[in-house]
Length: 110
Image 1 (cartoon, rainbow, N blue to C red):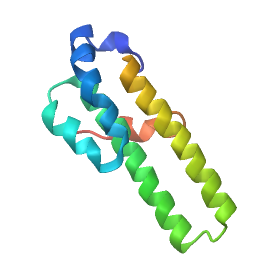
Image 2: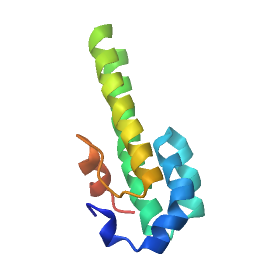
Image 3: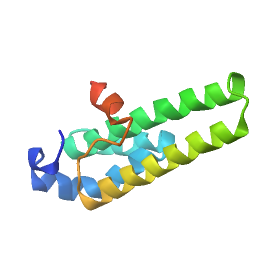
């Protein structure tokens, strides 16, 4: 799903109310449970799950392997920007993969 033309407009209208929560870590459980049959919401839940996976991996790497605060802060800033892009996509009715890491969400199959 690369654009909203693949998702009927009725699902987008109903899903926009909760889809943006998918980009707030574990809060993605809320739209995943409440609107589990809405393809628009499920798309953003998958993207949010991909973002959460990347966040956990980066946190692990920064805590135990990479000891450079500048590198970790730079990566965290990029993730923050990607997070904001995801929220804006969900609010504006777009089903676009996140930059750089969107393929992870598209690999998820649930």
